[in-house]
Image (cartoon, rainbow, N blue to C red; front, side):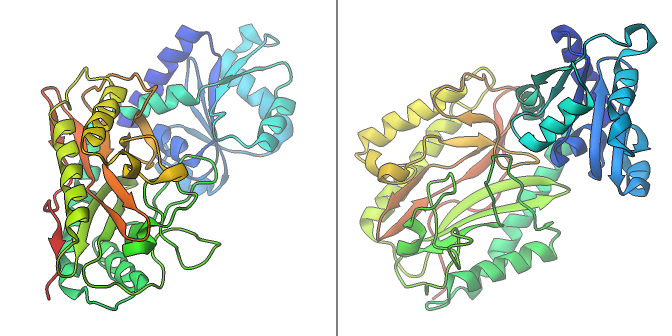
Length: 396
């Protein structure tokens, strides 16, 4: 039994406990997670029996890749009958179905169409169940994330010698992206949240890094245009200002998340102190990264440390644009569970991969901080990110 079949069987066991008839997987990332293919269509996992992948395009690719029975999607008029037969069998024809799906990402229009195709079915929200299953990474998933960490480290180190005063933020981003792609970065950074988009990362310097934006993070960046209002803009990088380099990388679909603060010359003492506090927060968090620690407790501990340092007003953003978390799960998407924030009671468990990112935002001056990604192990943690700590001074 391969990893995709193992995931299917686990989900089937959970469906039986809940009395669900089946699970209709509609989102591309979840489809890949459960069957190993990402062709356009729908994956139907009955509570018992074989999994069915109904594909619009490309049927040929799906047949080659998927751990499931593959059929052409065909007419929507027959969809309900095919799903009912697959999940219920002849003995239950006519009985009401309880079908789960990912209501957190399902478009309303598609939901209405599905309700029409399966009249009388009861629809359940299975999104949390999927996200909780995906919290725990398999060895193969961790291997891909480790590879992404090596790629980010090598790409950044290759670019550092080429950073020069006066170069535009987007020029630095272009150099980094070039090095990442040469090393296998797929160029995609997927997010689950509605209307959230992410490019390779957040690379900005000085005041522009502290410009807020819609993205749910402590640093914004002007971007190149209001139609893409985040990350690198056209501002020149100046001596003595913090350069925030928050990078992602996707290898075989799996992501790493890492932040380092760079500077040409020397950093302002107040910003240096804030950076030092960020590292202290990270070290204190590391000391409690072990199975059983409650996710929100790590965030509350960080708030106490920041308050003692007198930096609460600048922690993870500024003013109305502060974000209320310390870290987040990461895997196929950048915004996975668990979240290190109030209300998230998940105990840490072996196999979780978490990015922790204490940062401080100073309007008009810049953003400083650090971010590393960690694997929770049976006895504690393994730091997956590899790049050197500390303020990184570029060559003069």
